[in-house]
Image (cartoon, rainbow over all chains, first blue to last red; front, side, top):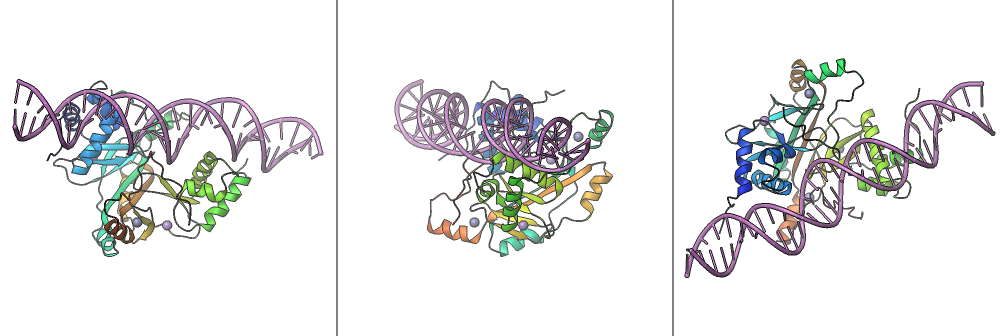
Length: 151
Length: 151
DNA sequence: CAATAACATGCAAGACCTCGAATTTTCCGA
DNA sequence: TCGGAAAATTCGAGGTCTTGCATGTTATTG
Ligand SMILES: [Mn+2]
Ligand SMILES: [Mn+2]
Ligand SMILES: [Zn+2]
Ligand SMILES: [Zn+2]
């Protein structure tokens, strides 16, 4: 009988997740972990496993691509994500108490939910004004969300 | 100066959307419109255009695939989506008033949000009990969400 | 009605994400 | 320490969704 095994990729992944503070794209995580140290698919599968254990939480860009965030010692919260630059910010919001209870009463089990806010952040609005006509949005899914090499 | 043009595919699409009542997958819509009458990409593009005009709204399966729903004469509402069969249901929920205002005050513009509830519906729980061991979930994205030919 | 500009469509290609099967690694007990 | 079972990783392929570009349609104007 075994839990989850401690492997090279997993160790590197956990270390990376701890260093990062907000929700990050898988591509970015893969980069930080080291492209060579493990396959992208492994990152996907490990994060899925971690998510089942409640160690990470998933959020989304406006285009639907996923972001992952480590959850140890941080309480449940939601984000606003900039449609232009992908920057995330905490939002002062909590799910009303009754909702999930009512759904349970209706017969639904294994409840979960997604709450995500989107907008254009102040910086991106400035940019939009100065660089008029330049398209600045986050590319859509099915397009390079890009690895936007870290500053 | 021109608005949107009235084309064969667009007419068929609107007719189809009016017939349907809940959120439906693109594949299903494409079927109903008639595989031959237009390309799948056209459906994607038209729905995107309709969404900009506020004629349709988008929701999501647990796996992230999109569902579209016509919005004429219906008021804003949210859904619970069965993780197993994809059935959707209205949820008694409204976004708290203050949230978007606070975000605006923080400098965000072009606000939007996604609120989606997921669970396993009663019918699917029954099935899960009788057909123990049979996997019944909705396939993940990157897997045939399938066209589950209509009954 | 004919010519033209603008818009819409179709096709092909690419990005993200997932799975199946083969291989490699980890773990555990002998 | 070694061998074997079980779990993890990798590779390849496929599904959803989006875009660029060439082509086809629509609307407008004379
Ligand atoms: Mn966070
Ligand atoms: Mn609805
Ligand atoms: Zn921004
Ligand atoms: Zn169900």
